[in-house]
Length: 384
Ligand code: SR1
Ligand code: MG
Image (cartoon, rainbow, N blue to C red; front, side, top):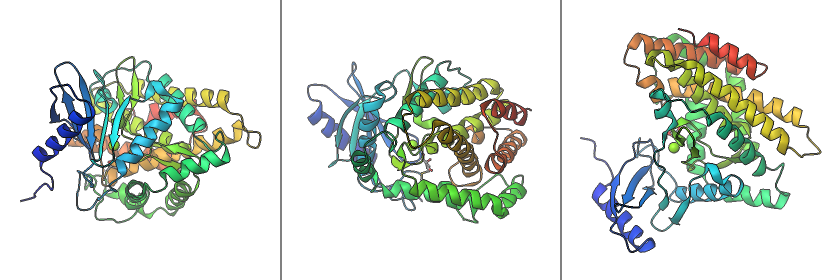
């Protein structure tokens, strides 16, 4: 029998003791509500007020043995919230306190928000999402970047996140390395995807592009990146958008968050038909997010030594390639997504996954020139 290496009752009593110290004068109760790969999340309430507590036990819940995590991981998440709140308060939840001794981060309870992945899978439409995400990504990626900060401040910021090594190693392994090798942790719908998985594993051009992205992820410390910006890290209502789960925060290329987000939008679009949902609104949101991002970045851009045109072309190309990496790692690597996994009909599931993988190969090798072209290509590729 597999024993969970934690005791929920003990954890709840640690959370309650810390909350009663930090926020006294309430009759707090606490229960666990998380179901993610890594975190333990508790809702703490007293009938009137509600708080969210995130607790780090020093390992990832998905596999405590293979994924030990640095004890101060939540400290990096806390620093990232503070850094991002300096440049875009609207999109970042309020943080109440962080206890490094107890590995507890306490923040605003986002309500009636749901995760964007859940919202898209239930067919909800978010008319302001692209505007919110495009502006958030431009503001945070420019205003926390080496292009905007003074050299001294940028170096201090890079140093602040440089020891977040446990989560950076997960990105290197799960995003850039394992899905492109014969790693035993990989899994895919077999036998249906066997031949495309083999094609990807054996394509030298794909390997060259992915190696280059991996090298630049480690060495182009352009800006503060969320590091895990998939649709489960975004909480939404039709009017509001909030970004959460920043434990992977690290300095990285400007395209890293955009690429992961676009890969997740695209998987939602490829899965939509099988769920009986409208894929076009997801494709429109993807392309509009880019357009808002590019326009907001152009308005902010003030870098004498590098033209906006040069930078935006590079970010576009890398965003599409990183979206390709994200689709591949979520389909044939270790950590899959509910968009595909929740499709009950096996034929529909594997057909959607196969189309997404074909599109990912295209993104890696032969990117679309602009967002209008991406719109048309996605519309065609996701057709039933
Ligand atoms: C071991 S963690 C698996 C995945 O969950 C996180 O959200 C990241 O995306 C990571 O790759
Ligand atoms: Mg997460």
